Length: 274
Image (cartoon, rainbow, N blue to C red; front, side):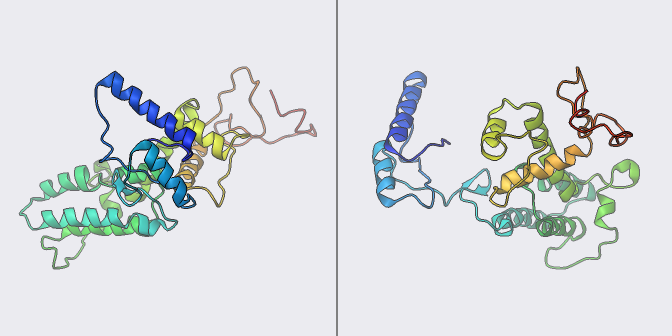
């Protein structure tokens, strides 16, 4: 997957890059199996010119990439509905088989709970969607027949507890999606030179640090999810002072217990650095 502008210069540069790849690897890129996805505001003339330069005549945007639609809409509920349907279909296909409780638990923990992992690592799933996924998992665990409902004798939140706490160790969908977003935010925080961090910084917080930036209404679903993960990190991380050159003593969490409070009349400007 390549990203570039749809003007003549960018298309020719991309074509040259692909040609160099073919010469170096000995592999040919199939234009018949390739597609170009344009933005909504791209004119028809620009589309035709780009397709002619790249020799790609198929327009994309309606397919799926890693289980998610290529073109995202604003409503996340509609965007991730296919994820729930996929989990439900897989669960129904197994419900007709005679499975022991141990077999069901293995499938539930290793397969069904892992199916939305990619979606959860990129986006904050709505609570309503998490409840729908939980409902599918609950029914698979308790129901031997998908056409009949069965009593759930133990609450789901008890099943998601660790085995030492009396549960089965099944993933809680809401907690797991928060953990995945926190992991992605930690990568951006600790590796600011990686490609993802540099792209996000250039678009969303060019003049701020990652911990201080705020989300905007026009931000993408992915960025809003990253900010949620960042906020979870801020509650637990602390500042290593070092030489104190970059430490703000009244703002940075460098004390492990609580935020410091000034006991005198020193101005914040004079005492902002150690």
